[in-house]
Length: 198
Image (cartoon, rainbow, N blue to C red; front, side, top):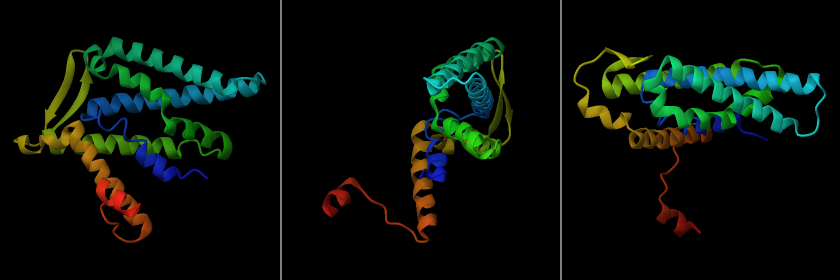
């Protein structure tokens, strides 16, 4: 059985280090919905034309094609912001959360629950990170980012906007998530303590 809550939490790992700004988060959210629609269209085409052989491969090819079209279209509108995250926009097409969202819609008819929650969580994390680390809110613009200063003087917290900082916060968040599931605070484990247990 798939534990969707753990997959949902861990599914943020590839994207959160990249979405340090709201502008990046918005581009990822837009792509996620585009790819979700492409995956649903691919599933519909497979069932409508009764394609059984290699049907998952066909759906993934449609999703990858949609990712390429999305990157090209958004790259025309916002060339500078897309230039820094272009490779990751292609990688996002292989997201397991996207696969689970499409599969869940196909089997249960729950069309928007998981994608909407994922989008809101990604947007929320992007907003919190940017406001706390940089004191701004940014939006994509053709020549770069359009930023609004919210809080002045955030230099001391900029580390938490970096990839290393957010990965540390993700580790703490995962520890808290598992502790909440168990109903008690779990002890921190190091590599040495694991080796001693074995």
